[in-house]
Length: 203
Picture 1 (tube, rainbow, N blue to C red):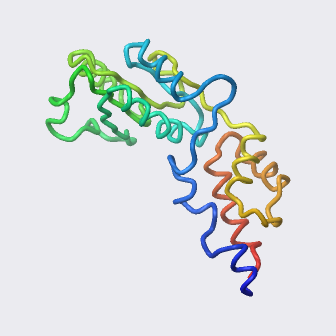
Picture 2 (cartoon, one colour):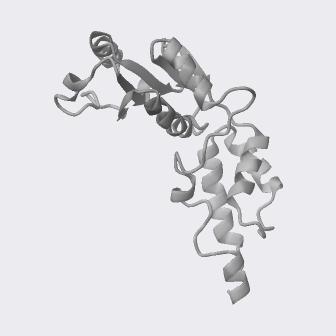
Picture 3 (cartoon, rainbow, N blue to C red):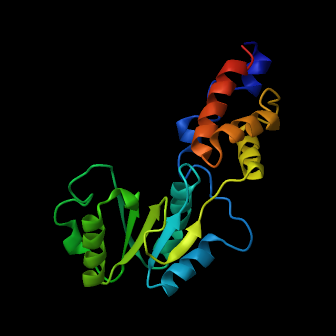
């Protein structure tokens, strides 16, 4: 790679994990929704709610966008990630005892918990008067807060945002082709853009 190409296309792939992980890109809202309005709705629902959407549609990114606003509203966030086939709740020992009425419990992958575990979370939050915000692929019975979805227009705009300005070897057609394969799974689409970038960038 000559000096000019190296300057235009640095060795760091713009679709690397660090560049696309939740929180690296701010969530793109459509219409009148924004982080403040969602937190207002969450507060109105006594700090209970669920973010619903398919795999890779931005649920984790939305959470990362909401958390600072939730904390600015005076909530103390306690963040947990559910894992499949786990027999125990994803809570460190004795941490539940520290929950209070200002605690905002956040659970990613809520549907991965058993019904018994979900009931334990719900009961613990009610006993401590803590809030409960979860992400899930299908509604789990909490007040609906937001439904994430990916359009082809959004996918193209995000890819263009990440690409170097002079890049012409990944095009909207590439994004459309990938979108047709992966649909609303933006995560898989960006993985494919990573591979295309590695294959096509000037050497």
